[in-house]
Length: 170
Image 1 (cartoon, rainbow, N blue to C red):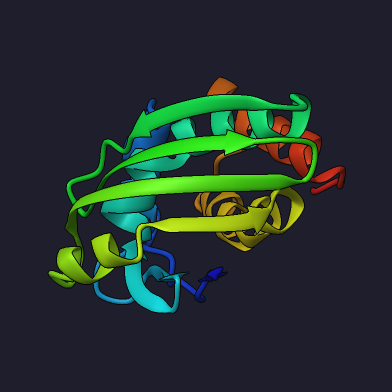
Image 2 (cartoon, rainbow, N blue to C red):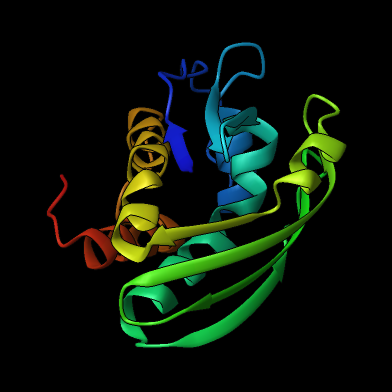
């Protein structure tokens, strides 16, 4: 089982605009109440918007685009976040995604528990859709802080989101 509860992160007051997406996300979301909850084979753990999602979002977008646009492939990633340290080896066909994860330092010190249930098999569309609320929270939070299409990385993030999910967002 794989599921994500995107949460309802608060937005920090606007101070200044950063030039880098990761820094912008870090300054947009507070640490104390901004997280999504991932359920990996029933084991919940938090991904904080401020320091975790900000670090994995670029790679996540690449993965979601590859999964959507290729019939079958194998792809590996070592997630760059200190709070989401894992190696994922992913394989998929037209409908199914298989992920084998080697967890190294997940939030909550549940490494052993996660590594005992390291493999998941999930529908590709379901997996992609589980990330939708998380990415939308980021886009909406950044927009509320004043980022718009005049910022290259923000425009690309919105365009990628619309391409992955076949939706229009303002």
